[in-house]
Image 1: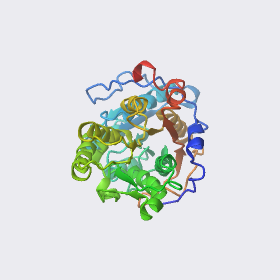
Image 2: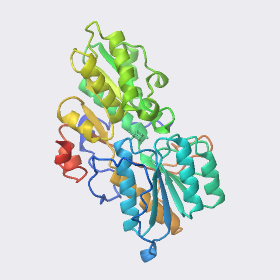
Image 3: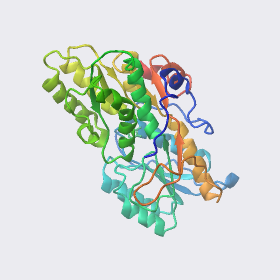
Image 4: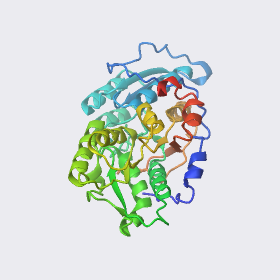
Length: 381
Ligand code: BGC
Protein backbone atom coordinates (compact mmCIF):
# COMPACT_ATOMS: atom_id res chain seq x y z
CA UNK A 1 0.00 0.00 0.00
CA UNK A 2 1.25 3.41 -0.88
CA UNK A 3 1.95 5.22 2.38
CA UNK A 4 0.87 8.80 2.37
CA UNK A 5 2.76 11.40 4.31
CA UNK A 6 -0.31 13.01 5.68
CA UNK A 7 0.05 13.38 9.37
CA UNK A 8 1.52 16.83 9.10
CA UNK A 9 -1.33 17.88 6.84
CA UNK A 10 -3.95 16.36 8.99
CA UNK A 11 -3.89 18.37 12.14
CA UNK A 12 -7.45 18.78 13.26
CA UNK A 13 -7.43 22.40 12.29
CA UNK A 14 -6.36 21.75 8.76
CA UNK A 15 -8.59 18.75 8.33
CA UNK A 16 -11.51 20.85 9.51
CA UNK A 17 -10.74 23.40 6.87
CA UNK A 18 -10.75 20.89 4.02
CA UNK A 19 -14.19 21.82 2.92
CA UNK A 20 -14.11 20.78 -0.69
CA UNK A 21 -14.28 17.17 -1.84
CA UNK A 22 -13.14 16.50 -5.40
CA UNK A 23 -12.22 19.98 -6.51
CA UNK A 24 -13.50 19.51 -10.01
CA UNK A 25 -16.83 18.01 -9.15
CA UNK A 26 -19.76 20.32 -8.50
CA UNK A 27 -22.46 19.00 -6.19
CA UNK A 28 -25.97 19.33 -7.49
CA UNK A 29 -28.09 16.48 -6.19
CA UNK A 30 -31.04 16.98 -3.88
CA UNK A 31 -30.79 16.56 -0.13
CA UNK A 32 -30.66 13.00 1.07
CA UNK A 33 -33.72 11.36 2.46
CA UNK A 34 -33.78 9.66 5.86
CA UNK A 35 -36.30 7.08 4.86
CA UNK A 36 -35.12 4.12 2.81
CA UNK A 37 -37.96 2.47 0.92
CA UNK A 38 -38.60 -1.03 2.25
CA UNK A 39 -38.37 -2.93 -1.02
CA UNK A 40 -35.06 -3.30 -2.81
CA UNK A 41 -36.52 -3.22 -6.27
CA UNK A 42 -35.33 -1.78 -9.52
CA UNK A 43 -36.00 1.92 -9.68
CA UNK A 44 -35.70 2.36 -13.38
CA UNK A 45 -39.43 2.84 -13.95
CA UNK A 46 -39.03 6.58 -14.01
CA UNK A 47 -36.00 6.62 -16.26
CA UNK A 48 -36.77 8.48 -19.45
CA UNK A 49 -35.58 7.02 -22.72
CA UNK A 50 -32.05 8.20 -23.32
CA UNK A 51 -31.76 11.22 -25.48
CA UNK A 52 -28.63 11.65 -27.46
CA UNK A 53 -28.54 15.35 -26.64
CA UNK A 54 -25.16 16.93 -26.08
CA UNK A 55 -23.31 13.75 -26.90
CA UNK A 56 -24.90 11.88 -23.97
CA UNK A 57 -27.23 8.91 -24.25
CA UNK A 58 -26.85 5.21 -23.66
CA UNK A 59 -27.79 3.02 -20.76
CA UNK A 60 -25.88 2.83 -17.50
CA UNK A 61 -26.19 -0.02 -15.01
CA UNK A 62 -25.68 1.06 -11.39
CA UNK A 63 -25.31 -1.78 -8.92
CA UNK A 64 -25.47 -0.88 -5.21
CA UNK A 65 -24.93 -3.29 -2.30
CA UNK A 66 -27.85 -2.59 0.01
CA UNK A 67 -30.46 -0.15 1.17
CA UNK A 68 -29.78 -1.07 4.80
CA UNK A 69 -27.03 1.49 5.23
CA UNK A 70 -27.90 5.09 4.62
CA UNK A 71 -25.04 6.04 2.34
CA UNK A 72 -25.85 3.61 -0.49
CA UNK A 73 -29.35 5.06 -0.79
CA UNK A 74 -27.77 8.46 -1.23
CA UNK A 75 -25.18 7.14 -3.68
CA UNK A 76 -27.86 5.41 -5.75
CA UNK A 77 -30.16 8.45 -5.74
CA UNK A 78 -27.33 10.79 -6.69
CA UNK A 79 -26.12 8.55 -9.50
CA UNK A 80 -29.60 8.16 -10.95
CA UNK A 81 -30.44 11.87 -10.72
CA UNK A 82 -27.15 13.02 -12.19
CA UNK A 83 -27.04 10.38 -14.94
CA UNK A 84 -30.58 11.14 -16.04
CA UNK A 85 -29.84 14.84 -16.04
CA UNK A 86 -26.94 14.07 -18.36
CA UNK A 87 -29.25 12.21 -20.75
CA UNK A 88 -28.61 8.57 -19.86
CA UNK A 89 -31.08 5.81 -19.19
CA UNK A 90 -30.35 4.26 -15.78
CA UNK A 91 -30.82 0.74 -14.45
CA UNK A 92 -30.29 1.15 -10.68
CA UNK A 93 -30.39 -2.00 -8.56
CA UNK A 94 -29.82 -2.73 -4.87
CA UNK A 95 -28.75 -6.24 -3.92
CA UNK A 96 -29.91 -6.60 -0.28
CA UNK A 97 -26.33 -7.43 0.76
CA UNK A 98 -26.69 -10.76 -1.06
CA UNK A 99 -23.85 -11.64 -3.43
CA UNK A 100 -25.95 -13.97 -5.63
CA UNK A 101 -28.54 -11.23 -6.06
CA UNK A 102 -25.86 -8.73 -7.04
CA UNK A 103 -24.38 -11.21 -9.52
CA UNK A 104 -27.70 -11.83 -11.25
CA UNK A 105 -28.62 -8.14 -11.25
CA UNK A 106 -25.35 -7.33 -13.01
CA UNK A 107 -25.84 -10.16 -15.49
CA UNK A 108 -29.29 -8.74 -16.28
CA UNK A 109 -27.79 -5.30 -16.79
CA UNK A 110 -25.38 -6.79 -19.31
CA UNK A 111 -27.99 -8.77 -21.19
CA UNK A 112 -30.41 -5.84 -21.25
CA UNK A 113 -27.90 -3.74 -23.15
CA UNK A 114 -26.19 -1.44 -20.61
CA UNK A 115 -23.27 0.38 -22.22
CA UNK A 116 -21.30 0.86 -19.01
CA UNK A 117 -21.54 -0.41 -15.44
CA UNK A 118 -20.83 1.27 -12.10
CA UNK A 119 -20.62 -1.31 -9.31
CA UNK A 120 -20.33 -0.92 -5.54
CA UNK A 121 -19.64 -4.54 -4.58
CA UNK A 122 -20.97 -6.34 -1.53
CA UNK A 123 -17.86 -8.53 -1.60
CA UNK A 124 -15.10 -7.22 -3.80
CA UNK A 125 -13.87 -10.62 -4.92
CA UNK A 126 -17.17 -12.40 -5.58
CA UNK A 127 -18.30 -10.85 -8.84
CA UNK A 128 -15.74 -12.44 -11.19
CA UNK A 129 -18.30 -14.27 -13.31
CA UNK A 130 -20.35 -11.16 -14.04
CA UNK A 131 -17.23 -9.09 -14.67
CA UNK A 132 -15.97 -11.66 -17.20
CA UNK A 133 -19.34 -11.45 -18.91
CA UNK A 134 -19.07 -7.66 -19.09
CA UNK A 135 -15.58 -7.92 -20.52
CA UNK A 136 -16.69 -10.41 -23.17
CA UNK A 137 -19.50 -8.04 -24.12
CA UNK A 138 -17.05 -5.10 -24.32
CA UNK A 139 -18.77 -3.24 -21.48
CA UNK A 140 -16.48 -1.01 -19.39
CA UNK A 141 -16.82 -1.38 -15.62
CA UNK A 142 -16.21 1.31 -13.00
CA UNK A 143 -15.67 0.09 -9.44
CA UNK A 144 -17.75 2.50 -7.37
CA UNK A 145 -16.32 3.35 -3.93
CA UNK A 146 -15.21 -0.28 -3.29
CA UNK A 147 -12.54 -1.89 -5.44
CA UNK A 148 -13.54 -4.94 -7.49
CA UNK A 149 -10.92 -7.57 -6.72
CA UNK A 150 -9.24 -10.45 -8.54
CA UNK A 151 -10.32 -9.44 -12.04
CA UNK A 152 -8.82 -7.77 -15.09
CA UNK A 153 -12.28 -6.65 -16.21
CA UNK A 154 -12.24 -3.45 -14.15
CA UNK A 155 -11.63 -0.33 -16.21
CA UNK A 156 -11.58 2.39 -13.54
CA UNK A 157 -12.08 2.95 -9.83
CA UNK A 158 -13.63 6.02 -8.21
CA UNK A 159 -13.61 6.38 -4.46
CA UNK A 160 -12.56 8.59 -1.58
CA UNK A 161 -9.00 8.34 -0.35
CA UNK A 162 -9.61 5.39 1.95
CA UNK A 163 -6.24 5.44 3.70
CA UNK A 164 -6.73 9.14 4.39
CA UNK A 165 -10.09 8.41 6.05
CA UNK A 166 -8.17 6.32 8.59
CA UNK A 167 -5.43 8.91 9.10
CA UNK A 168 -8.06 11.59 9.74
CA UNK A 169 -9.55 9.37 12.48
CA UNK A 170 -6.17 8.42 13.96
CA UNK A 171 -4.91 12.00 13.91
CA UNK A 172 -8.07 13.16 15.64
CA UNK A 173 -7.42 10.69 18.47
CA UNK A 174 -3.74 11.65 18.68
CA UNK A 175 -4.54 15.37 18.83
CA UNK A 176 -7.51 15.10 21.18
CA UNK A 177 -5.60 13.02 23.72
CA UNK A 178 -2.48 15.12 23.07
CA UNK A 179 -0.54 11.88 22.84
CA UNK A 180 2.82 13.56 22.27
CA UNK A 181 2.62 15.39 25.61
CA UNK A 182 0.14 13.63 27.88
CA UNK A 183 1.38 10.86 30.16
CA UNK A 184 -1.46 8.44 29.64
CA UNK A 185 -1.89 5.57 29.56
CA UNK A 186 -5.22 5.72 27.75
CA UNK A 187 -7.42 2.71 27.10
CA UNK A 188 -8.36 2.09 23.48
CA UNK A 189 -10.71 -0.33 21.75
CA UNK A 190 -11.08 -0.77 18.01
CA UNK A 191 -14.02 -1.68 15.79
CA UNK A 192 -13.13 -2.19 12.13
CA UNK A 193 -15.12 -2.88 8.96
CA UNK A 194 -16.09 -5.75 6.70
CA UNK A 195 -13.26 -8.10 5.66
CA UNK A 196 -15.02 -8.58 2.30
CA UNK A 197 -14.68 -4.85 1.56
CA UNK A 198 -11.25 -3.83 0.31
CA UNK A 199 -11.74 -0.35 1.81
CA UNK A 200 -11.93 -1.69 5.36
CA UNK A 201 -8.24 -2.57 5.58
CA UNK A 202 -7.26 0.88 4.31
CA UNK A 203 -9.38 2.58 6.97
CA UNK A 204 -7.92 0.36 9.69
CA UNK A 205 -4.32 0.76 8.53
CA UNK A 206 -4.62 4.52 8.05
CA UNK A 207 -5.71 4.96 11.65
CA UNK A 208 -3.48 2.27 13.10
CA UNK A 209 -0.37 3.69 11.45
CA UNK A 210 -0.96 6.98 13.29
CA UNK A 211 -1.65 5.27 16.65
CA UNK A 212 0.88 2.42 16.54
CA UNK A 213 3.85 4.35 17.97
CA UNK A 214 1.75 5.24 21.03
CA UNK A 215 0.50 1.66 21.38
CA UNK A 216 4.10 0.42 21.13
CA UNK A 217 5.29 2.79 23.86
CA UNK A 218 2.36 1.83 26.13
CA UNK A 219 0.64 5.23 26.08
CA UNK A 220 -2.36 3.66 24.38
CA UNK A 221 -3.42 0.30 25.80
CA UNK A 222 -5.82 -2.02 23.99
CA UNK A 223 -7.26 -3.57 27.14
CA UNK A 224 -9.08 -6.38 25.30
CA UNK A 225 -5.85 -7.23 23.47
CA UNK A 226 -7.86 -7.26 20.21
CA UNK A 227 -5.79 -5.06 17.95
CA UNK A 228 -5.53 -6.83 14.60
CA UNK A 229 -7.89 -6.09 11.72
CA UNK A 230 -9.20 -9.66 11.84
CA UNK A 231 -9.99 -9.45 15.56
CA UNK A 232 -11.74 -6.10 15.19
CA UNK A 233 -13.60 -6.72 11.90
CA UNK A 234 -17.38 -6.37 11.51
CA UNK A 235 -18.86 -8.54 8.72
CA UNK A 236 -21.15 -6.51 6.41
CA UNK A 237 -20.50 -3.47 8.62
CA UNK A 238 -23.59 -4.45 10.64
CA UNK A 239 -24.51 -2.25 13.60
CA UNK A 240 -25.85 -5.25 15.55
CA UNK A 241 -22.59 -7.19 15.12
CA UNK A 242 -20.51 -4.21 16.23
CA UNK A 243 -22.85 -3.79 19.19
CA UNK A 244 -22.62 -7.39 20.41
CA UNK A 245 -18.82 -7.44 20.11
CA UNK A 246 -18.65 -4.15 22.06
CA UNK A 247 -21.00 -5.57 24.71
CA UNK A 248 -18.69 -8.58 25.12
CA UNK A 249 -15.64 -6.36 25.44
CA UNK A 250 -17.36 -4.09 27.97
CA UNK A 251 -18.55 -6.96 30.14
CA UNK A 252 -15.24 -8.83 29.95
CA UNK A 253 -12.79 -5.96 30.45
CA UNK A 254 -14.57 -2.88 31.75
CA UNK A 255 -17.22 -4.17 34.17
CA UNK A 256 -14.88 -3.47 37.11
CA UNK A 257 -15.06 0.29 36.53
CA UNK A 258 -12.08 0.55 34.18
CA UNK A 259 -12.58 3.48 31.77
CA UNK A 260 -12.40 3.09 28.03
CA UNK A 261 -10.92 6.40 26.88
CA UNK A 262 -11.27 5.99 23.14
CA UNK A 263 -13.07 3.70 20.75
CA UNK A 264 -11.76 3.85 17.19
CA UNK A 265 -14.65 2.93 14.89
CA UNK A 266 -14.05 2.73 11.16
CA UNK A 267 -17.46 4.03 10.16
CA UNK A 268 -20.78 5.29 11.42
CA UNK A 269 -22.79 2.05 11.25
CA UNK A 270 -20.24 0.34 13.52
CA UNK A 271 -19.91 3.44 15.74
CA UNK A 272 -23.66 3.30 16.27
CA UNK A 273 -23.33 -0.28 17.55
CA UNK A 274 -20.61 0.78 19.98
CA UNK A 275 -22.69 3.76 21.13
CA UNK A 276 -25.68 1.46 21.78
CA UNK A 277 -23.46 -0.95 23.73
CA UNK A 278 -22.03 1.87 25.86
CA UNK A 279 -25.50 3.22 26.62
CA UNK A 280 -26.61 -0.14 27.99
CA UNK A 281 -23.43 -1.57 29.52
CA UNK A 282 -21.06 1.14 30.70
CA UNK A 283 -20.97 3.64 33.53
CA UNK A 284 -17.47 5.06 33.17
CA UNK A 285 -16.35 8.30 31.55
CA UNK A 286 -17.67 8.52 28.01
CA UNK A 287 -14.96 7.75 25.43
CA UNK A 288 -13.84 9.55 22.30
CA UNK A 289 -15.60 7.76 19.42
CA UNK A 290 -14.71 8.11 15.74
CA UNK A 291 -16.86 7.40 12.70
CA UNK A 292 -17.23 7.92 8.97
CA UNK A 293 -20.03 8.97 6.60
CA UNK A 294 -21.94 11.54 8.68
CA UNK A 295 -25.02 9.34 8.69
CA UNK A 296 -28.07 11.09 10.11
CA UNK A 297 -28.23 9.06 13.37
CA UNK A 298 -24.51 9.60 13.95
CA UNK A 299 -24.67 13.30 13.20
CA UNK A 300 -27.46 13.56 15.77
CA UNK A 301 -25.19 11.69 18.18
CA UNK A 302 -22.35 14.12 17.45
CA UNK A 303 -24.65 17.00 18.27
CA UNK A 304 -25.71 15.19 21.48
CA UNK A 305 -22.07 14.53 22.49
CA UNK A 306 -22.29 10.75 21.99
CA UNK A 307 -19.90 10.60 19.01
CA UNK A 308 -16.82 12.79 18.73
CA UNK A 309 -16.27 13.04 15.00
CA UNK A 310 -17.05 11.55 11.64
CA UNK A 311 -15.47 11.72 8.21
CA UNK A 312 -17.69 13.34 5.61
CA UNK A 313 -17.62 11.78 2.16
CA UNK A 314 -20.02 13.81 0.06
CA UNK A 315 -21.80 11.18 -2.03
CA UNK A 316 -22.90 13.91 -4.48
CA UNK A 317 -19.27 14.56 -5.26
CA UNK A 318 -18.40 10.92 -5.89
CA UNK A 319 -21.48 10.50 -8.10
CA UNK A 320 -20.62 13.53 -10.20
CA UNK A 321 -17.07 12.28 -10.65
CA UNK A 322 -18.36 8.90 -11.82
CA UNK A 323 -20.90 10.51 -14.16
CA UNK A 324 -18.06 12.54 -15.63
CA UNK A 325 -15.96 9.38 -16.10
CA UNK A 326 -18.87 7.62 -17.79
CA UNK A 327 -19.22 10.50 -20.25
CA UNK A 328 -15.50 10.40 -20.96
CA UNK A 329 -15.55 6.62 -21.51
CA UNK A 330 -18.56 6.68 -23.81
CA UNK A 331 -17.20 9.62 -25.79
CA UNK A 332 -13.80 7.99 -26.20
CA UNK A 333 -12.08 10.79 -24.26
CA UNK A 334 -9.24 10.53 -21.78
CA UNK A 335 -10.69 9.56 -18.43
CA UNK A 336 -9.81 11.70 -15.41
CA UNK A 337 -7.74 9.77 -12.86
CA UNK A 338 -5.44 11.01 -10.12
CA UNK A 339 -3.93 7.77 -8.81
CA UNK A 340 -2.40 5.03 -10.93
CA UNK A 341 -0.39 3.25 -8.22
CA UNK A 342 -2.37 2.50 -5.10
CA UNK A 343 -5.22 0.21 -6.02
CA UNK A 344 -3.99 -3.17 -7.16
CA UNK A 345 -6.80 -5.72 -7.17
CA UNK A 346 -4.47 -8.76 -7.20
CA UNK A 347 -4.56 -8.86 -11.00
CA UNK A 348 -4.17 -5.30 -12.25
CA UNK A 349 -3.55 -1.85 -10.83
CA UNK A 350 -6.77 -0.01 -11.53
CA UNK A 351 -6.55 3.63 -12.63
CA UNK A 352 -8.39 5.53 -9.90
CA UNK A 353 -9.89 8.86 -9.01
CA UNK A 354 -9.66 9.55 -5.28
CA UNK A 355 -11.90 12.22 -3.81
CA UNK A 356 -10.88 13.89 -0.58
CA UNK A 357 -12.62 12.96 2.68
CA UNK A 358 -13.33 15.77 5.11
CA UNK A 359 -13.08 15.89 8.91
CA UNK A 360 -16.46 16.57 10.55
CA UNK A 361 -17.48 17.27 14.13
CA UNK A 362 -19.97 19.28 16.11
CA UNK A 363 -18.17 22.51 15.22
CA UNK A 364 -18.36 22.28 11.44
CA UNK A 365 -21.32 19.98 10.71
CA UNK A 366 -23.64 22.91 9.96
CA UNK A 367 -21.39 24.28 7.29
CA UNK A 368 -20.62 20.85 5.79
CA UNK A 369 -24.01 19.22 5.99
CA UNK A 370 -26.72 21.86 6.23
CA UNK A 371 -25.33 24.88 4.38
CA UNK A 372 -24.28 22.59 1.53
CA UNK A 373 -27.82 21.18 1.25
CA UNK A 374 -26.77 17.62 2.14
CA UNK A 375 -29.31 17.49 4.98
CA UNK A 376 -32.05 19.81 6.10
CA UNK A 377 -32.04 21.05 9.67
CA UNK A 378 -35.24 19.03 10.25
CA UNK A 379 -33.51 15.78 9.34
CA UNK A 380 -31.07 16.33 12.19
CA UNK A 381 -33.73 17.09 14.85
C1 BGC B 1 -17.63 2.76 2.45
C2 BGC B 1 -17.97 3.47 3.75
C3 BGC B 1 -19.15 2.81 4.42
C4 BGC B 1 -18.99 1.29 4.49
C5 BGC B 1 -20.24 0.62 4.95
C6 BGC B 1 -17.43 1.29 2.72
O1 BGC B 1 -17.10 0.62 1.57
O2 BGC B 1 -16.47 3.32 1.87
O3 BGC B 1 -18.27 4.81 3.46
O4 BGC B 1 -19.30 3.28 5.71
O5 BGC B 1 -18.65 0.77 3.23
O6 BGC B 1 -21.28 0.86 4.07
